[in-house]
Image (cartoon, rainbow, N blue to C red; front, side):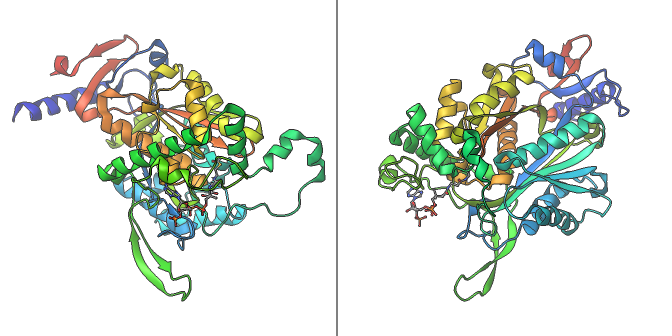
Length: 462
Ligand SMILES: CC(=O)SCCNC(=O)CCNC(=O)[C@H](O)C(C)(C)COP(=O)(O)OP(=O)(O)OC[C@H]1O[C@@H](n2cnc3c(N)ncnc32)[C@H](O)[C@@H]1OP(=O)(O)O
């Protein structure tokens, strides 16, 4: 046996000694070792019943009405990601305690039914329940928070969260009349504003000029193009076998969609500067510095830390905290600037502890405002691009951002530990969640005796 193999055997024997026992008794825990050990982190990172993510995958994101998923319904999008997270982990579908899916558009009762149908398409048995959640653009993130809370409450041990949106088949629209009493409530009037108008409001109120919005959009495309060229999205994308319909003749052609189609790496400030304002005459929000209307789905398989250990599954990330906040609906884009500090504080951390931020780029105006307001180093924000380049399938985006964040943290290994996903929410809210890298147990295993704060380095163990 060579030295590496011997070391691995020794580490695995030691791991069995120190892993939390499956019945949930708290004592010793096994975890990845990374930079920084704040006192707050010590308080939190002790639990055998920590909620962890063992798989986070998404479909490609494609342009609504034009892209490769334009004729794929919500059922097929979801069934693809459901099946993928189960296949990749080997978790038997009957082990899932509940499925929670975020979705924004479309008839809500039909969407709930479609999510249930998708579970059957993915081979999940009838015994596994399904529900939907709608917190508008953060619905996918809310689904993850809901599953984490239910696991933490002991309702079940394994849960599946995610999101889906087909903006091709379910356009953004208001149905029915408007309550006339809205005139007396300025906040309520803000809820009726088109999202692009709220972007114009943020730009005007906080002085985010057109050039800085276009520059932000260019960076989004360049980062996404670089990530795509480096093959990074392959870690998180599940190809979708589907069909596209010829819009004139109606003929269907089978296709396999495997890449995002919105990324334009050649975008320049000059090429964007010629685009007309999309939402307000003399405004600054354009097709080039807004997120695109998009189709897609994402899914995240979650369980207790003890369950992941029992199954021998690598931990992609640990769910640490969640916060949803309310803000003025007419400038809803500021939501992340309020939600992020709240979620980070709830995790017992400070903004300086966060290594990577996935802040949804609904519009360059709102995303750049939030980054500036929080004083975050932009190098830490959306390192693989964001919604301006990749797209924003509303209800799926929170789970998409979580997948992108966790795979990025995993690739970085020891160098980065904490990440944040945050979204602004139409009708004036913000949501954010803090995740911690699961560490790569095989590479960076460290035994920590939680009660005694004993740290054994890999070298000391072997
Ligand atoms: C809480 C929240 O999250 S709120 C956010 C919710 N989401 C939204 O509100 C969606 C916002 N976005 C939109 O509504 C739409 O994308 C709009 C109205 C801004 C633009 O719609 P469209 O005109 O259909 O945009 P489209 O993507 O087709 O681009 C139009 C043209 O702009 C130009 N363009 C767009 N991006 C670029 C770019 N990066 N570089 C150069 N040209 C560009 C192109 O000429 C493009 O046409 P082409 O794709 O045929 O080349």
